[in-house]
Length: 352
Image (tube, rainbow, N blue to C red; front, side, top):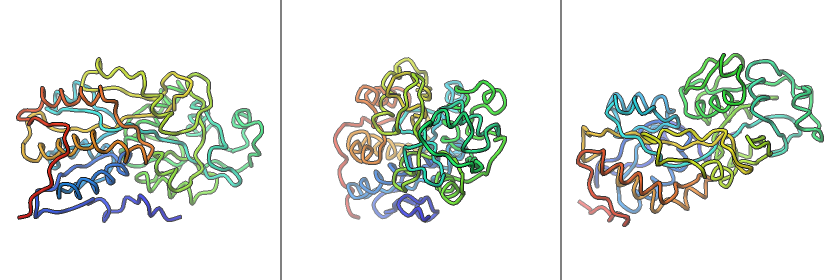
């Protein structure tokens, strides 16, 4: 299957370039928010003439690049701990909220038909459940005809925020998984096949009979992958959607989260999707290039104001107004030389 709509090829990563008008904004990191960042970048370029060169290389790569000062901003779906943010001289803030979904390739199983829970998925990735007609899976799906096909777990081989969200969820669902694998952008998976990036994992799941993997919801939805339902913390079977991601994020206490360090997996609530997460931006508190950081902040400010519908169209959840206000206050308080940013859309760049 060809993933043309949101393929993260090297050619696609340079989202836009118009150096004759102004220096492009450079960033690197998470593949999880790439579809919405690309959509925002296209609209922002048309409005301002300023491009976004975003390398979609995974959260681990984004953290490395911002710490190495090779980009203006880094992006990660695993928030850095407050002490790491401070020690590195960075400022961290959330940009968008979305969800990762388990996706399967089982003959005869359509999107949204299969129900799983965290403990069962953990057992699959631990190599304890090896067939799709295992009694534990059949108990969750009494009316679904499941074949005796061998399960092929697919995992992210690169350092990734989606890895973190998925492994964090499984760690909260299974004490054994927590003790033997744990939660991180890169973990040692006990079994399965590795694939790089959301696109690589999506392709591997689609091409492998009996596969299960995990991808950002936009990849599953736009490419008609057979995503699963999940039993959440309240014991309810829920579908992935912007509404269920929003439900998981509804009770998030950002105001009391140092450096916005907040993980949204396995939240309470009857409608909450269990693998929900925010994607974060990292910039320097004392920028090496203030002009470049200013341009990046202008882009983020514009996205908060003008990018909400574009985000919703891709089933991401825009940040609530109170949180955006809090983020803007953080910029003002913590970024040296941060300019006053209004809610108004930026003026178009002048031709040279």
